[in-house]
Image (cartoon, rainbow, N blue to C red; front, side, top):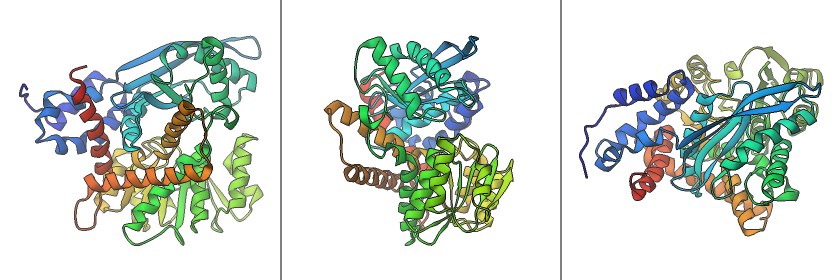
Length: 451
């Protein structure tokens, strides 16, 4: 094996920035992983010689395409769609589709890169990918959304398949949008197979898929607290977001005896000092899902709460925090405020919701801090189980799936401890998750040679 000159972390990151100009989200994601991986691979010549981290940080392919559709007024609209297939060393590419005006190549590359390690942590045979379009479903009619989804799939179908790439939902893509895309895939190919996950229960979907990401983030939180002899019961929780992940995280916190104080959306956050009960969570679910309402209207239904426009909830004192909205929503100063207010644990429900300054602050304070690639892996884990059920032409009972989800989250937690235990009772979950995910993917890549 050839011996290579080892580039240092700064040199590696300079190369990443040079190759990916104007892609700050992707560079940030690579930086966060590389900071931990460089220490781990320092004395492992095979990883250096085979340029493993360099190869993982270069997607297998980025497919970009035009999506033309017609709105209800007969106007022709043009959006841009992408599918980033980052790495399939351990299984078919797997990752969501996001419809949002903020979607661009950098965001999708960061998500696909993160997804590679997250999927590896689940223990299931899934590679990493992500896709989407800069289409905004808000304010669109159901027929406009259907036409867009059909046009999007007319291009995407040639790049995916049950043994190639299996997309799922994400921001702006729920069960309705998955249905429209699956129908178009079936129409074009005449194949009924598990090419998408997040499907309806009547046509190949899995029980608890909707709940899985939020529930999984709380199960991971439970595992972290247990290392300190504590539990969720009696803890106050600050949660951002009010969509699928946030509401189900809140639901599980309540079920375990905790008290949820906040939810949010892009307009601001609500603070309910009386606690957001199951009844209130059900109201939010219905309000956001069926009426497409804003979280500020919560205070009209529940007058004990207050709405704080244009702000995030991280200034509200709490025991635990779960950022469940979007990337880079929790900044360095927010992290310091949480720490100063006595927050004991943070479990990320969203993908990379904490910026690098925030990550460094949590690690310096040595609080229990779970990165999204570990704590929000429950969603993709149940998506992987949906793939298995589709392949076997069967469906598992809810009790079986709940236990599998708990076991997977426990397995991820154990892997983080294995590589992140720093001694003295401190576990660096970021380092543990990064190394555990990297090692599985890297060893598979070594086995395949230079491909």
